[in-house]
Length: 237
Image (tube, rainbow, N blue to C red; front, side, top):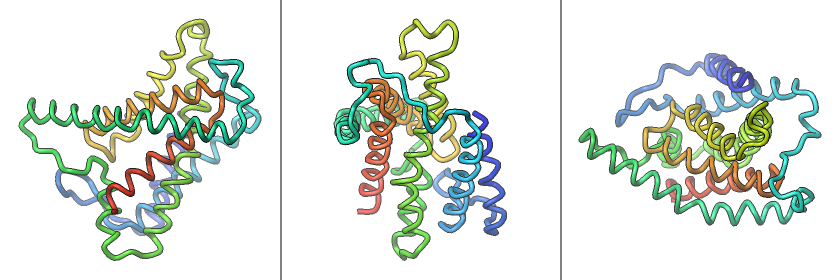
């Protein structure tokens, strides 16, 4: 949690250094004024989180405790294959949950939701009309750096910490997965709408499940990266 706060604080500093202004309102969503500001915010976030994470004792040597001891020594390519398979399994579940949540919200409020639930994706879609180096940097970070850092924090640290808390050690690991998933979604509340939060909870449950089944963070990192890539292809294609 300290790493999340550190990232938030550092991203604000980076945005100030970049000269970024206040977000503008479009389609009831707050969109950063330019892609350059997004890149600086992301870099600041990564640096702030990274500095805190480096202070965690034994982080580099730590491993997720697998629910299946026979798979604790899973090779890297099997871990990648497991992450890919998990993405194939959860992709329709994530889409369906977001769609159903959107229909429910529309019926209850009468509010017409925008086509894209994520403001960063909307900004990337607009920037793709005139691509530049900032777009390339943003895409690289979203597909590669974001999955690594977020899975290190949420699955490697937060989920494992909750799962090893006194009183929860002998309980079902789904308690830790569910709590981590809720926190994961809430931390993205500034850039996604309500249906997006529901979809992120389902997605994060998938991340937590595959990490626990394989005992390898690489599995959920691959799954996370593929999800981000699929979203980018869907929006930019």
